[in-house]
Amino acid sequence: MTTRTLELAAGKGAQFWVYISPQNNTSRVVTTWSVKFTHKDSNWTGTLTSDNPHETLQTPGLSGLFAVEVEAAGPGWGPGAIQPSEGGPQIGCNDNCSSFVGLLADPSGKGATYWTTWDAICSPTQS
Image 1 (cartoon, helix red, strand yellow):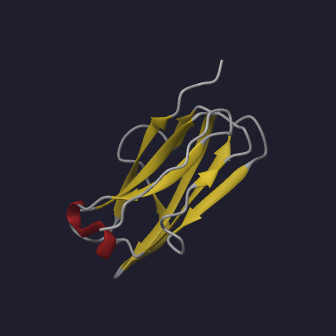
Image 2: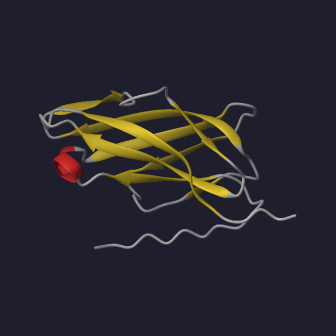
């Protein structure tokens, strides 16, 4: 089992990572994926992919609302965009926090959805 270590420091900007759910054998059903984050108030974008699944994406001092676009594929399905399981295709994150996108395979094994967790881990803010 791999343990994830997140380095957080207040004021450095929002951080993002991707979580692969163990439910429905997601790691076997979703073999390639990419998650693109776009800051709503600037031109910053960043992408996390299955090529480096443990990477953490650090923004340059940004916080707020980010649009999320997720593409995925697996044996016998995709590639293509997948939809959020609930809510809209966005995520929020403060500049002293880390938020994540979770990928979940459909029970049928022929697709997937995702969800977002806003401000999942935060470090204390500086005064």
